[in-house]
Amino acid sequence: MDQPGQGAGFDKQAVEGYDVYDPLPRGRGYPSGGAMEARTKAEVLRRLRSIAGHVEGIARMVEEDAYCVDIIRQVQAVQRALAKVNDMVLAQHLRTCVTTAIRGDNPDERERVLEEIVEVFEAAQKI
Image (cartoon, rainbow, N blue to C red; front, side):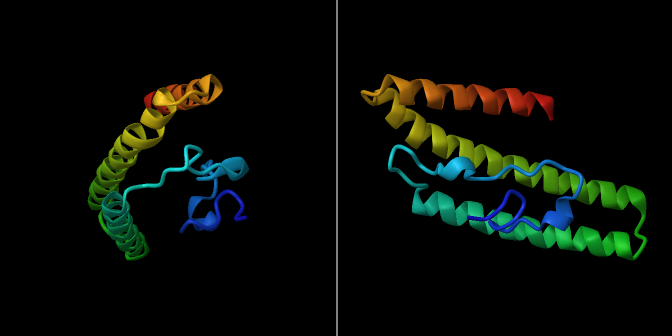
C-alpha cells in the first residue's frame, strides 16, 4: 500500500509542507461495491493529466523567472481546473456510493457515508 503523498501520481517532494490526502485511507475504496463509471473515470484522468502538464509548465515558468503575475494567473487556472475535477468526482460519488448507501439496508453504512459528505463540505469551506 502506498504511503500518503506517494502513489496515485503524488510526488511527496512536490507537496512538501502540505497535508496530502491519502486517497484510500485504511483500505477503503468503494464500500458499496461500485466503481467510478468508465466515462467519468476517463474524463477525470484526462483532466488530471492535463493539469499535471500545466503544473510542470508553471514550474518551468518559476525556474525561468517569469513575471509573478503570469505565474499567479497560471496557478489560478490550475485551481479552477482542479475544482472542476473535484466537482466531477463529487457528482459521481453522490450518484453511486451515496445513493447506494441511502437505499441500502445498513444504517451504519448510511450514517458513515452521510458523515463523509458532511466532512467533505466542511473541508471545502476551509479552502
